[in-house]
Image (cartoon, rainbow, N blue to C red; front, side):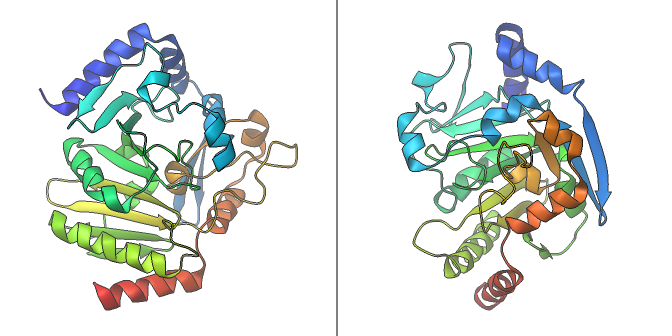
Length: 299
């Protein structure tokens, strides 16, 4: 049985018995949506109240230490089923979806979110999930569980940036601030990725992983990896006051899909504001150029 078939069977079972998940997936079919075309790029805005907990998540070390990890099996709802992958990861439906197929792939171990040591795992999962994009949100870059290693998987066709990028036939494209790698061999894709990580570390302040979002998918012929370096977690306008916006950009938002949890924010959102937020949370032009130069000189 293919993994895709197992996942479809999992959805069928879960939406029959898990009321919370069924309600949130049903809501996707009649939610309010706005679509913009801004500077040649598509932006889709959802009014999606079920994403409130993610947008408002407190991810500082003190808050994390005081709450139970919702990705650890012992703290998950009894209705939540799991597909075990290579005895290392749990594949589960996300009960707070942005798309009608939205998976969480979490380590069976409680270990911190990190990408470079686990890029091979991400690529292997992407190869087993045709039609999906694997997403990684770094600590302080949209991960609401930065203390537990996990990825997400969503349908490729739903992400505007991926639909735009797939038409490239270059080995490396730069949609600043997105670095887009295309390689036919997995070993080359991983090598290029690690060189980018070295470049990111050169501009980092400290020894921890440089803030970033990463996307990965596999076609019949090629591996695709998009790296989105970040400068900050949330924009200055972040907050729940009337003059603030509950916007906490992660991988999905950075690719053009914005689930908005508060109706007041949805009603007054503009494409120029979202573009401004995207620019605010990404690295500077000088850092972008430095990383690109580092890559060209070291690949």
